[in-house]
Length: 341
Image (cartoon, rainbow, N blue to C red):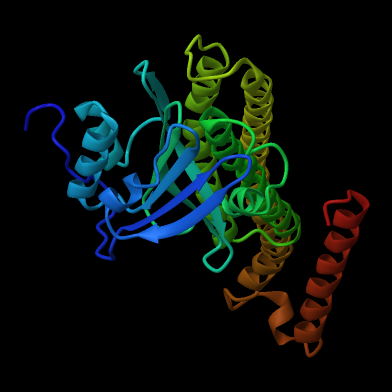
């Protein structure tokens, strides 16, 4: 296919795509769920900001309609539909295209869910694409509805910053849940390490690798936004972008710390299993060592040679048993003095 062909690459979905639009300025606010892109465009006005949020990228025709309506480059539309993109930023003068990963922790399945988030913003609009319904932007919608803070007094660049900031802040929530899981594994690791514990450690290491792949490129994206000379970003917004950059660095530090902890936990697991095996082998060795001389005595008197002097004595059998018991007790006392047992 030629470059710019819109093909959905990702999890196959069949539910209808949901389009929700918010239009606002300092004095007015409108919110509505629409059926078509054309209906959403009726909300666009140069005197206000329009936020079009699209839940679902599995219908290429909708992405194509949005691309034509907002003058997006064909390669941008292609990247929106392909959900395996690396976090990145592209400046097209009339709009800025940002791709990043949105993470959420699923408590029911005890795992981190991820999806690609694409954000396009210009002078008077923000368009956001996500793979499925449900996001981390509810508090932003509440601030817009209730006119809290400065979000309705500022432009589309501040709304785009708010969306990015919410995604980055939610990383801390995910890391907090992962941290609790790591603490629980540490307790189990010390008390009773099992093969399930090892599997959990490997799963967490894979999640940390994925988090690292999501966060490291994001630092570059935020840094480019912070240093951008685009006329689409007001100078007052750069301060907030620097704050997001600081949060990104904190997330990276936390991810690296957790990776080091998990690597150490893997070493602890191997050491614990090795120590348990050593204890088992120690007990078996002591038992075997005690029975070696007893086996020797039993072997001697099991030969039944005709002229063995003790064979005809009535006390021979109990005497040999007592001898074997004394030898075993002496060996146990010796092992205890040597602190082998």
